[in-house]
Image (cartoon, rainbow, N blue to C red):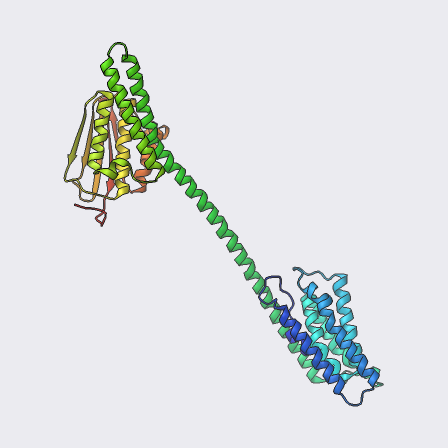
Length: 412
């Protein structure tokens, strides 16, 4: 039975591996030790000193596990064949040979010795140690007890159990390696998931910064521009036309209040105050009226078709488009007359058209440089809409079209 212990041997595993249930191994070694000592004690025809010596050696071989074997088994792979490992395994081999030489039934300590060989040594040296002990232990016992040296002294069942133990040890070793490989893959997957989560967080933060930049540009920045323009006009007319100057100041105060309301809406991450309080058509018409009041130029506003409620995000984008295009008309078209048309005639879309009478521009050259138009195109693209720009010497028309698929968000 000198090879039976190999069948419970494991070559390699690491911390955190499910095979590392060392308390079970502790129980196994303790049980195997008690069993072997009992067999040695009960064997007939053995002198008391030999029996005591064999039991002492079996106990010492078992104590090698908690004293040194477990610590070496926990060390990471690749496992080098160090002097400490070689010395421990040599001591185990010598102790087993000596115990079997004293009492033949001490060969059951192979359960303890062979398992430790597979734990402590690389697979090749562990197999070599099992084969060597399978041959040397019974021959040493026969020699010590006055017999001759012959291979037929090795019982056939001992050879069979040693081979079986080696095969099982190889299988469990490969199982442990596969378990470690899967553990490494899981660790890599967790690291990849952490990277994806971090990248998603960064992308989300960037998208939120872009959204806030667009909201600030379309609301607060334009409002401040209007306030500055109105106050400059009031200052210029303060001495010559007090009434006009007062009207510009009143418009500036009203613009400041509306800007404050927009700032509160922005902080609350809600919809613009205009669309929250009234329909899109009313909000766009109010933006056109404000343009006329602040610039003194006519702003014709018209609605085609029957106004209907659409998705809140669609209304926000169309309102922001109207505000941006009116601001561009104020800055780049000389604050001249404008026309604002909201078209509901297509049941699957809503279109906003803003026309000014300025000198026109090159859309391809302006798109990349204009922060406002770039934000507008980005918002429209996210809703699968379109922005069409027709600009020439007689003026500019920008048409923003957004799809409005039928759904519960629409209310006729």
